[in-house]
Length: 278
Image (cartoon, rainbow, N blue to C red; front, side, top):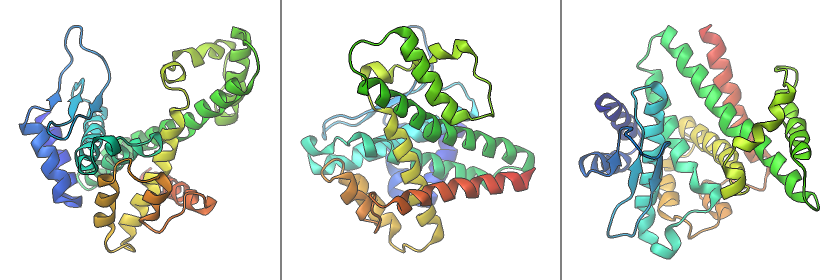
């Protein structure tokens, strides 16, 4: 965990001293419940609070590479939450469409840092894991959302068989001929808790993934000289502005299909870099 802290802080510092400062405060101030223990809730999250307190982070850190990126992810949420205290309690809460932006961006910062610290054989694993994450955060979540849309568009009560058929139909669109889905896969919709406790949340992951890739591509291109200032401003605004206005800070329009292609192009670039390592 100490090593993971150092990696995250170095990655954050390379982007913004303010990012690193909040992360340091979280580590030194006891904001993080780090390790698994009996009867502790699984998973990970960062929970916001009132402005005279601080966010709280729950982890179940076990020392795997995935745990490093989970730490960065949750700290991204924490930084977003802490900065958005500036717009008051009633305005700080972010809508679903921007809730995952800072967290996924923080993961990209660590990924970028790790690229320069690993040998070629280790880079293959790093890239493969990142591409798998993007697949899970983008295409898989879109699959979930198209399933939800059809479920809620149907009239009347659906049978278990109907749920399964819709799930299988939408899943085949994603996997194509790459995977053979057995009849048993029809039940897999039932393990996604979001469908029950937060309907239509899943699309926010896909939205955030493409948004972050577009923003990160802009940041790395160097074409936006004051990118860091604009990005921190976006986080400080919390939920006080619409997603369209927030993305507009960078000169982008979320209603323009070409904007979303920027994120797709960044994925293509990652795939190309990965293939060069083989």
